[in-house]
Length: 189
Image (cartoon, rainbow, N blue to C red; front, side, top):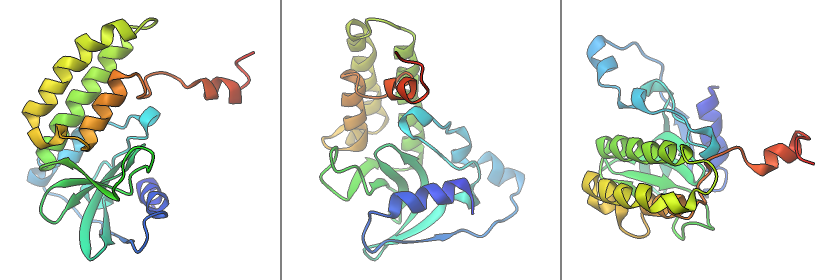
């Protein structure tokens, strides 16, 4: 069992009636390697963003009669491509979303674009240690416009990117080592 498969299995635990299966391991030609959109996605463990490196590590999920291809996790749930090509968040955190499936993006290309734009803003914010609040409008206002340009429905409330933009703007999105890590390792007195 791969680490990614185990992550999906854990996340699906709370999604009633969902089942999952592995994709068969396969060989790829150079064209398939170049077309692998997953290869550009980098994990961001502080927010539980994790992605497989190879397409055959994705996990097929069946839920409520629909099939999804789970290609990532976030702190908010499972990122999956639906049969219609849209990207959905499955089993989202109840405190954040009211639905069991939330719109993320119109297609995988839009997801890659939005994820990269969002992570660029995250790392820009990390460049302002200390009193970050005063710098956030200069970071998140352009981000809102960039995400809207990349995929307009992605910024409609309560879509995934709309929520993450809000969390970053309000400094709820994890940017640094959590205080809990200091406490658990005896580094805070």
